[in-house]
Every structure is written in C-alpha cells, then in structure tokens.
Length: 121
Image (tube, rainbow, N blue to C red):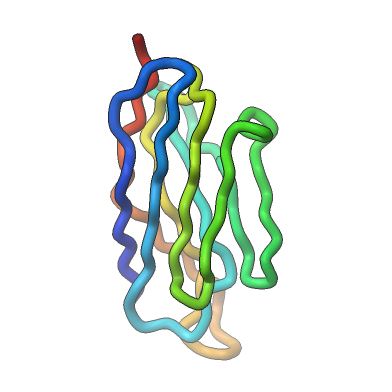
C-alpha cells in the first residue's frame, strides 16, 4: 500500500503564489510517475503536471510558464510551485502516484485526499 501526504493550498489573491507538496510512503517496488491533478467545481479532473522517474516533466497548457513541478524521486517527494495564480486555477488539487509493487506487476494508481486552492480577491 502507498500512502500520500499532501500539504499546501489555501486562499490566495489573483497574481499570488502557493506551493504544494506531496510525499509518498509505504510498500512498493518502484514509483513510475508522481503528479498533480485538479478538479475545479463542477468540472472533470484534469492533469496539472507530472514527473516521471527518468526526470521528464509534463504540464497542462493552461499552467505552462506559471507552475513549476520539481521533486526528488529517490525521496518520493514532489513540489508544485504555483505562481501568477488566476481565479480559474481554483480547484481541489490531488496528488497521484503511479507505482508497481513487484518488478513485473501491474501499474497501480494511488490518490491523495486533495487540498483546496482558492484564488479570489
């Protein structure tokens, strides 16, 4: 089992910044990808940014140039620095980990509980 501990989030004015962090722990063979998704009120969940074990980072077009995902996969930790926040960034942000529990096991996904980010004046 993999457990995720998320921190960060809160209320910020437009143009402000926030930093989210996610730490994975538990029993697993390897982590393939760690990332953040978000679900705005009344909308579907969408990918914000992800980091793969080789170090490849992917961003949603809507956050490119404003959000930065960093992390240390050896410590199973990622950080999402969110700058120049806009009201449309308001959402519940959820950490996701894709992992295997054995060398040839299926790829499994674990979700965090989510943290609310509200961008409002």
